[in-house]
Amino acid sequence: MINFDDNINVCIGLNPIDFRCGLNKLAPLAESLFGKDPKDRHVFVFRNKSRTDIKLILYDRNGFFLGHKRLSKGRLSWWPRSEAECHSLNTSELLKLLVGVDPRGDFHPDWRKLNLDEGQGQHQHQPLA
Image (tube, rainbow, N blue to C red):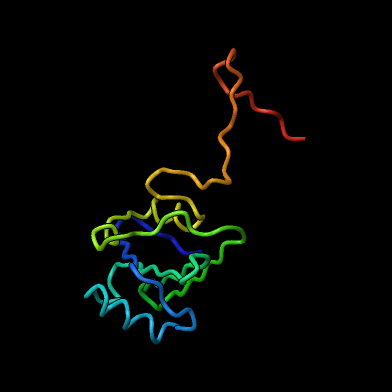
């Protein structure tokens, strides 16, 4: 399992990429787009044109990790629109993005809030059967 610690910088590609690309093309692309060494403490995140897939690359001190996530339903609800937003995510926000949630705090439209009973004020937990 890959671990994103707080010392990793998240760099997001603004424009979609060709998802046929593997590590041999993505690592040099990340270096040219962001001006950063792919073997430093960075995770580089890219999307496809239709906003249904995410690829990320990360060097974990003994090799590159290439991740590919395809959403099973819907499209990414958020992606940066400016260069400034491409460098502004932290690792917890990246994890939200990877599950299809807007990392700025807005939830995916398919998600529903829990309804609390107004008279009780606290959610009653049901025991597992």
